Length: 273
Image 1 (tube, rainbow, N blue to C red):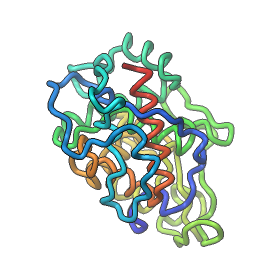
Image 2 (image 1 turned 90 degrees about the vertical axis):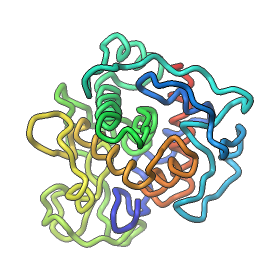
Image 3 (image 1 turned 180 degrees about the horizontal axis):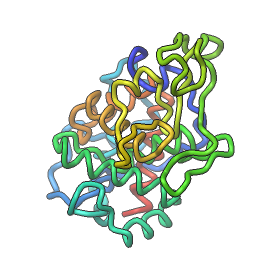
Image 4 (image 1 turned 45 degrees about the vertical axis):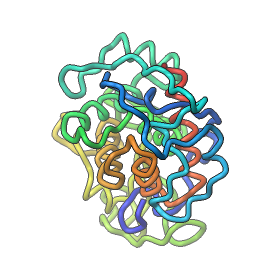
């Protein structure tokens, strides 16, 4: 996340790196909707490459979570499609089987899948996979469970998920940008919601993914769609190693964070393929 733009402003994530697991598989498995296979990009990296790279800039490409091959000679098959119909129309059978296989709460996966489908309709060139959103949700808040929170039927986290005060003490220093509207702190900003948005970034990218007419960072449907839009704006084509890495690195300027999201996204892809 560009320090002036995105959700974490260089701070550690709420869930830490414990949510990241080590498994590198191809991003073809990260696709939510069935698309024709295309040749992997020229910068596809072999398994294990990601762990050895420390990116120095947002454009560094340690590996492509959505296109890396493990083994490098052939990518795995794509997981079943969630839907090819209307945006956010996720197949219930796909949802149940994939949630169980990947170990993601059904309600959270519904938000990630719906957001990916919506982005696929509004910004098809981005080629965002649901596994990327799921990995970020896992690393940021354990899919909306940080601090004893849980997701209600409508997707809203309760109690509200609010990160530490960004007053420069161990984290970034960001003075209040929302008069405490989203984070309840009129002096300093705090990251909010299951996808941990900085208030100023939410004001720019906030979305109504739930369709209730309100853009609420504590609602995982809204937050997942906003995160998808932000990632696409930051990375462009996320099917390339450079694009995917730039997008996730923009979300949080940390090489360790990027590696955690990479590993988690690939694990979800492997389990759901």
